Length: 474
Image (cartoon, rainbow, N blue to C red; front, top):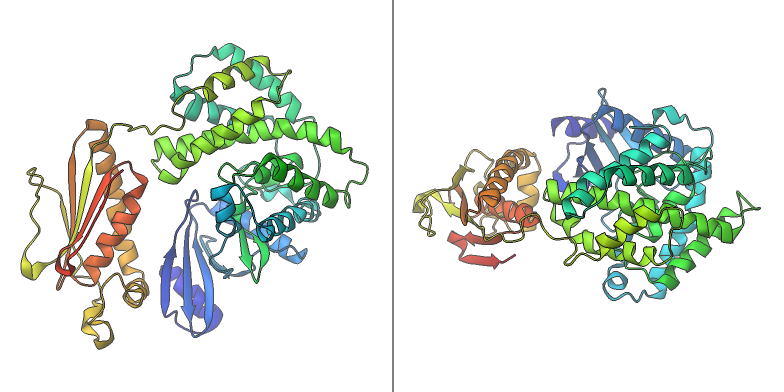
């Protein structure tokens, strides 16, 4: 994290007092909040130089055009790290949580949803105006190649894994026909690609847009489909039509002669395409990478697909036939390890009182020594606290040492748990020790337990010296 700290010091003239890793979802980038004396910025560590350059170029272009996106503050020379303004922690997805749970959205929730989609034509047309699309990564335009990438993504990472029987040659022909339908619509507009409520932050009660680095030149229908048919949004048919009407009203500013009925019919094909693309992503991120959030989202996407198929797609008869078989499967969105009986026990402990014994009888597991990490227990203000308290968490994360320490352990845990699941083993143990079993070991054990929730395993967490015990079954 030294690169982000260096950027922070160069920009603000102050050393960051805290550095906290922010939770992510589908992204492989790491986000951090760096703070010092009333200054708070978001630091980003990218994994792809080209993707970072795409984001930075797009962000600067959008900001200059007055679009609500995070302003980039500083960039490292190798483009792998950058700082941007802090838009807080509340996404639109979080804000509409009650509506998503019940299906009944309050007027305040509806208002924010409508204000958000009303801004979409601004992003598409202003964002595309004068933009050099060659900077977009990995493709500069929505074309036949990208259509087939997404359709094959769905085929290999979801459809084939479902066990549905289909004929490859007929499906390939259906994909070709589908591609022709979608590519009839070309324009010089910006296609956000992942325009959904998780990528909208609410700052001073106004929507701001993030994570557009995968955008490219493309038709306007795609982003409407992404937003209105987001898998876990749980919008009713009535609310979907309200949102489409709101978008269409804003669209008239740029395309006043567009026929709404024609647009609505065209939109259904993009909704179908986006739904298949999403299922492919959920299959890969969930079934292959074992990320629980994506596995949990699969039933919602299949529900959307089932409802969509009721409209009928006469130009795609074989694809429709295969998809109807898919949505008829029970249960939908099943885990790749459906019968897992693996229990993962995680301890924090004091070395003064000995290493915990493996009560499963298997006599094994990992033991990690946290004593090399800067000890908050040396300071009077932290002596009565534990690694569960926010003040200690901020102390431990301020230099990034414990974050790096845990990232190596996460990689090791991933490989070990996946192998245990494949082989049907029943117990695995991780133990974290420090001097008193109070600060560093408690933090490490707690965070590993949170990280492993993405797996279908029983997690037993024991902070031995604190007398804290939790048991979370699958």
